[in-house]
Image (tube, rainbow, N blue to C red; front, side):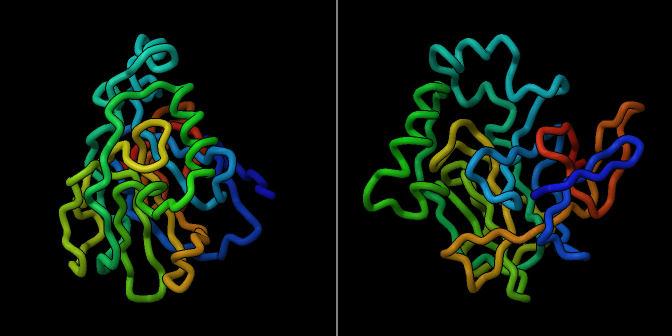
Length: 229
């Protein structure tokens, strides 16, 4: 059960299994973002959505098109944003050919993602993750980044990457409701079981009541506005 603790302008959620010194991530997206942890997600697996200065994932007037019609993914803040390596290591797995869905309809996508996909026979990792990249830090921990844009992954399989290096772009591939970046850390030996482990961001900016404040070795609260710059 998560228990919140707070200082004057920031709240961090802690979990019982969080180690005293969890691994530190380089922020994988720059600009205004929010962490999401939808129902059914492990508490240490995060979806990151880019937002505008008002905290919306698209222009407010696009909400009706998203709900009742078809919204092009290019209208969202997340689509095509550069994804940066959260840790240094070696690329051990990747998928770069899964197609992106280029229009959004909230009701259709919720039905597909929450009902149809989990019941589909013969699903592969790419059916759920879309285009994805796995980085092994050499110490038994890997970072998984998923739902990347088709053809956007830059490093080849087996390539060495450095934290902060551009890797790919945010897409809408796999089992998604809208463009976003899924990211988590896990043990290499447990990769197929998908057991995320706690992590923090090495540095980010948090919007408090008196403006932007730089934070170190913490994790923004879900749905709260922050910046990886």
